[in-house]
Length: 321
Image (cartoon, rainbow, N blue to C red; front, side):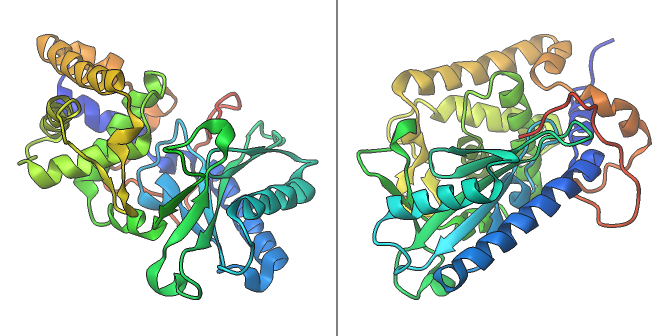
């Protein structure tokens, strides 16, 4: 019997819901809040209070691969240079958590990978330091400069990126249809080797909904978004502007061959699924750990529940972040 594409994708989304790993998420959130308070205590008046960001904040996280992101907005006079800010944060986190976690410098963040706990869980946080662009104006304009750690390469010849992370979060608000497609593309991307930046796929999806008539059931919407990516990834002059910085075009993060590859991948996926609906299972797999949970759970909502209900946790060998 042919696979019902719409029904399958609804099951994919359901089995990747964050509610299935509520106990693990609670551990992440507890540790995140502990780190935020430690940062506030250490840096005091040199920072604005740290805030949450990333896919969890945007409600696009999936339970097979996630971490929690924290932004630390430093005040303009806190450090003379961005690299000193970056190194200071790294040194503090290493002093504070180095005996119980691995601390590592990443492109624009400091990663904290806590040692496995008694349940076999590993908590992974990304701490992003940024210095306000305009003195005493961060509370009004949310503009930050991020240091780019050169070991991981630069977007350009610059060692910093100007951004507005709050604007990036606001850009996806109240867009539940877009968020569903973004989750599906992230599931495909993670299953296929995580070749493309999640933010790139997010902006592609939002722009497709803005520019095209994206309607129908979940498969029809996903197909139209993939067609939009296929048609525009290699188009001259096509841009995906970062809502946090109008000078940052995410298409610049792809080489010419990468754009061609993305377009070809979308075309192949569409053709193979339409020629044989069973192929959808290989591109957009369910999370098999929670297929049984799906049979008895509601499809309403996708985020974290806050009530007292008990939630299932992933097997001890399941790793997140």
